[in-house]
Image 1 (cartoon, helix red, strand yellow):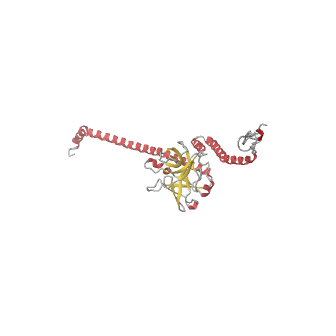
Image 2: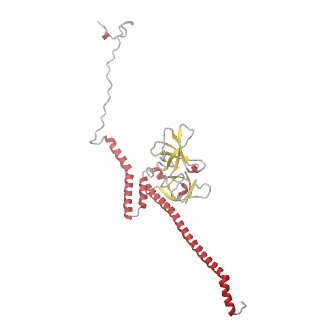
Image 3: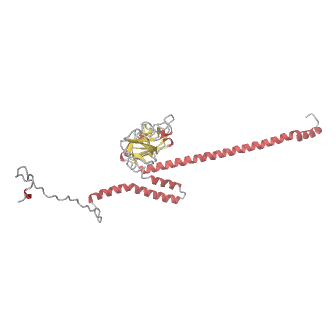
Length: 346
């Protein structure tokens, strides 16, 4: 720096070409690497956002499917129910209780059944004007009288109070020993008692649990509803419980499957046609039971229909026995005693 200009320039050039040249190359490579790392971070951020959106898409689909199923259940019930949101309170009893965004102001009462499109959730325990507390089937106090779908076995369904993953199963106790249930058999509420009407789906049979009892069987039940995944529920009012829910969960399984297929369809015209067919099927299924009962009541007092021969029943006539002839009592005891007079010689 102290040298004159005509001497400084060649010396500086020589230093740049010899001493500083490698350092300049290293700096250039460092800048290139820094740019590559920045671009990589941006790409990773874009991929992370895409992955987050991809992960949230199935959750949205599941939520939409659940809400769609709840709308189907509301259409089948038609009246006598209260839809509500379900919240999971923080604490150790998250799996045992639910907070429901509906209370006495809309007709919710204690001991009201809480259900979803899949089946039974539990019952309302405490009621406030704008909210309620419900216990789920996992609560130790839960119990419901149940029967198999084919009515071949009945018993009491309670939570399976064990440790481990099996804690989130149910057990059906008190099943008569003569009754046997196959795996996959549907278990529904039997309607005994004022709380749960007959026909609410509870779960399916997994298998028999070995017990020391010789007069009854116990079966392990897979519940139809997982309380930890609920976001919306339906509370049945007393008038709906009194009128019953026959066929709501059992007869419409095929219709619900058809509805899911309709949602997956891409053609709007096909959707409309399938929806119309589904509504017709539901209307037929709703009126089939009433028409059958009305026809039976009309034909019962009239006997066989015209043109139909009644079954021929041949009466069974007992064989005719000869009349009994009393013995002749004119003879004294001895030979000939008890011999009819018509059979004597002479």
